[in-house]
Image (cartoon, rainbow, N blue to C red; front, side, top):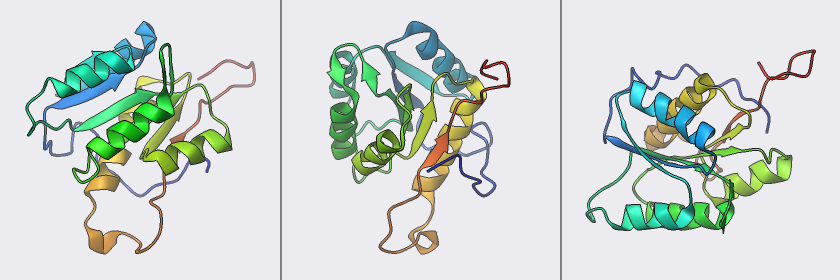
Length: 173
């Protein structure tokens, strides 16, 4: 599963919002702030936390009817297993069509497949740009909101994947 050439997808700013909040669970402050900037620039409120316990308590403190527009999750968190948290969040929002976007420095084929099997809709490798996050969120939202008639019956949904771009000098562009 490499970087996919997906069909035209409305940008995060262009697409109609169903909900106001995007949950961000990323332990590294710089990455959390980068994702928050994208979310807020797109007109959403960022619920940014740095660990799974805080994320789950923040989500549990909301009204039962509350749903985020999307969740951005780092697989490598200081005090928890990101895959376990991914599975917990997917179970909680299973029928609600809340997309889950993974950001991770773990970018092997196995990591991507495991994230997809656990319920991720998009996977962005670190280091990432604000554009990578915006693109992944837009694709994930588009994928979960497509009418059933446009989905391939009996197949697992294709995961959107964005790998870091490394230039000739070895630096990320």
